[in-house]
Image 1 (cartoon, one colour):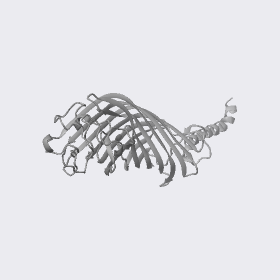
Image 2 (cartoon, helix red, strand yellow):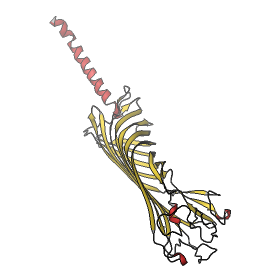
Image 3 (cartoon, helix red, strand yellow):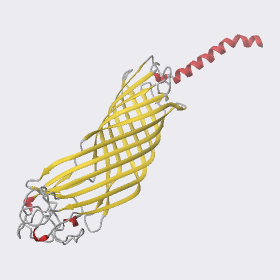
Length: 404
């Protein structure tokens, strides 16, 4: 019996060695040096002198877009010489938004739990846009219904008046309707400021579906903090002396008078997120990628709306006017879905005797934050809160990642 077993002992040892080698080769199949791979095998880099760390940095050049952000209506003055009503041949004016720079940073640890990678990322973006002075010429700017129209009163000097009191029409227009509730301005300036912060922690396992196709799901926790400010200033630059037929200029830019509408939106939310990284190799170093994730955050949405009126002082028998302001603020807890998509090209290579790997992505990114623009409508003596919509970002992303 012992003789019979000794005859097969070399074959058993060789078989065990071959099996062990196959298992090791399968685990290293993601390093790009093997011709084939078992489905869903590990796709992360297996480096010599592997310390399992990843660091990432990115520059973004993107543009903000919001819904429910109309500023005013530009209206043809020739349609009404007596009482200004709108919309009549009107064009909606939106806030201007310029492209701005932001950044992303991140750190990760590979093989945190059985080939799972833990990643922490932080994204920051800030955009400030100031619109230059715009003149209406034969047109006038009618403020949107988000303003508090009671502050247009020229009869009552208190901060709040009734809807039947007189309003200030555009300079030079006959004033014969004492109950006009709409006004026009000849000049308008606009400005916005948007700040978006994102923190998230994810767990992901790099996996190969085929030799060249990587599909890596990830799961985690996402935190978003958004602050946005909007301001628009209306003035009239034509000086008309007081008379019984022509309405005087109450908002002269030269005299330092103005009519201003301001909104501030803040949002913070925390919630789960799920997504997927995909990459398809076109060669040993170049490929295309597509990433996407969704998140459902829960937090607080806060909105403040302020209407400020600074009229020209000492206008005839109407007396002196002091600046007045009406502001409303509301808060509520709610859910806010988020969506993020990114596509582009990828370059990756190893260096320093295969102990490090660099990955560079250049792509287009689009992100949207739903229901975070809760706009207060204070057109009447009472107010309501419009759902508004959300805030979106889109633009270029240039990202570099180092594995060592």
